[in-house]
Image 1 (cartoon, rainbow, N blue to C red):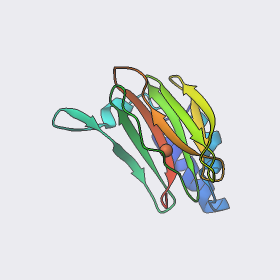
Image 2: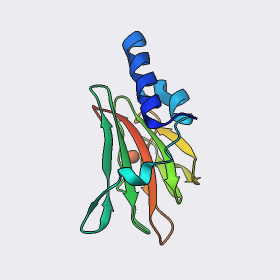
Image 3: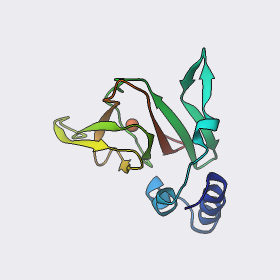
Length: 145
Ligand SMILES: [Fe+2]
């Protein structure tokens, strides 16, 4: 397992040598990313944790998303390079929708440590914290999305 700085230096090195098409390129590193200090990175507004960008480059950005109890996103897409999600604390539920007819194509549950990949070519999605207490997740997106 590698910490954030090791992750970033390996990924930047890979991008310099091989270019960058999609966040799928980053999965081998993302799987091994150990974010033991993520709680110290979270920003707060009025005493509440808020979504916090922890890294941004020309190619991608990394965000910690804070989910209040029972909070859910709208149905949305991740165009171009797609997005990676890893649950840091709590759990998340996801419903996926066909990108054209918008019919439900799957329901998923992600426990702490689980990760997934989303892209408009696969599905649109809606993400929800099913619990009454907060959940936190780590997201990697191309800068364009
Ligand atoms: Fe999303």
